[in-house]
Image 1 (tube, rainbow, N blue to C red):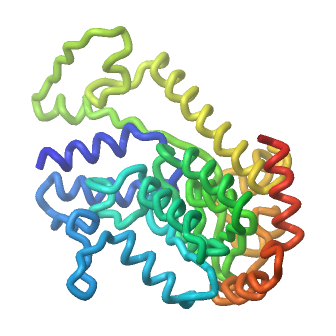
Image 2: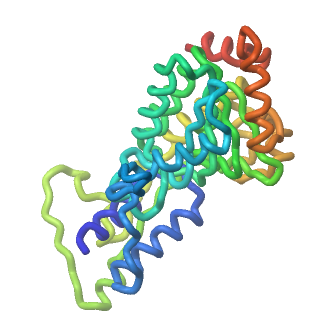
Length: 314
């Protein structure tokens, strides 16, 4: 039971680039588990599915599935960016079925090193996730597109951290019924003091370091702690909007004053805000990539121009 308390504490204290309702759903599941009322999810990443006698990770199983959707051969490596995004596989992915930035980064490295891979397609269906590891993976995707064409297919959701990463591709397409956006960062603090007082429980924290226990759930959040956490959230938001602006080749003001301002936009609205380059099904994106791959340059003018902007920006 202790590990579920640890997971809940980590989720509540993490800066999120994730749709709020998704995080709330995760917290409700954990809270029910803590109360003994919900079955534990199977450890997908720990146990993994069995494929022909070979035990593989859940991420690898998804990668093979989306690769099969695109068809093998043709020099296109398809990488899945599905579910809630976290930095490491383990406790956090065992019950949410999400994607680890470390696993995704390793798969991207493998695709870049594979001489038979000429293009990379990111299949995105994510509500976002923790900000930890996202900036680093975004930089990795941005660097990869300078070497090989990288295309993102929003199929069907790229929200918050999911869009942060998708925006780093050279081209971004959304399915006709897809959505993109939720550009923003948020944190949550829960004050359990009143509920615990009703139960006759009082917690005494013993610590060293002036701010060591600030933000703990056993007392109301102080104004000083609130200001500090707001500052940290603003820092992540600045990194988020800067990355989107650079990835999409637009001024940062266009990201902050447009692109939904934290809202998730439908396909047509996302295209109007220049958050995506077009509206295409996954199959149409694959077809376009195969057609472009037959050309010597392997990139279209749009991706080339955007890559030049990225190079100039460092």
